[in-house]
Image (tube, rainbow, N blue to C red; front, side):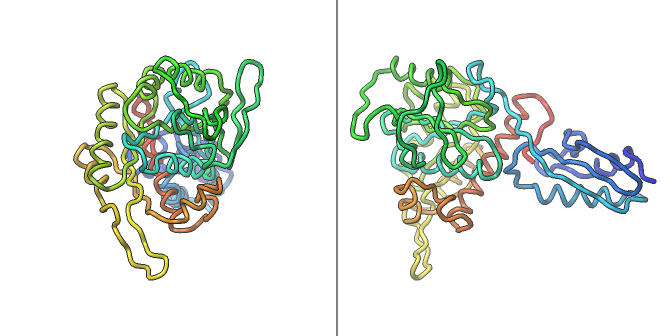
Length: 353
């Protein structure tokens, strides 16, 4: 009859393709049981949006089945997100991921909303903090209205599509201008971090305003975040400003998860012809030049606009469509890169798998 030791030795041959370490050493194997010829165990990944889930499961099953005397293998795939535990004011939040652009008009908020919903649909616990004080659009994109409830001395973030949301847009009128100086901006960031009942979250995405101003500085001073996502369109004008956002985070000694190229190309829905309206590949080339991961590209499509105007992210409005799959792929890359970054910051052997 096979033994637990023999099964573990076999599973040591299953490597995490991203870190090059085996899943036993990484602590992925849980609840291993050997009963006669039947072997059962769980593989606990570091994100439910793991891009290598199927590969790791197949390899683990094959390795366990190769042990002499094994007649049946039962593998359960689970996930537990790790993170640097961003700050004392956010004890239940594992990863804070700012989404920045440098330049306005590149679709940063739309990317934030769809990435958050995609991660939530994969099984993660997700929140969005809308820090774009001057132009808060997350409530519109997520279809949420009205002021949040209050519980004790904290605000309770409303939820949409499995995502908790907090925005200054809940408190300011749709046409009311927000005219604030630095100290007031710092105050609202502090309030949204410390006086909101975020609860347990795997990922808190922060939709930053364009530029490199007070809110970015305040966030960097208050939090040890996992890494920033930089959104840009392909053309030089946007990329030049996006580089400034990268430079800002580097000067503040804050990590960057990678670049996302939004509005990367357009495919005509009638003839199928592809047009690179803003050029193509600029963000990927810039990422390679700066030694920053490239997280993927998202096409320009009318469906994004119509779904956003209806308060329904396209990953919900058109699940399974090429557009939704593009957002899902970027969300997976973000989760994977965040897992690796968290492993480095924690100094432990965790993995993006």
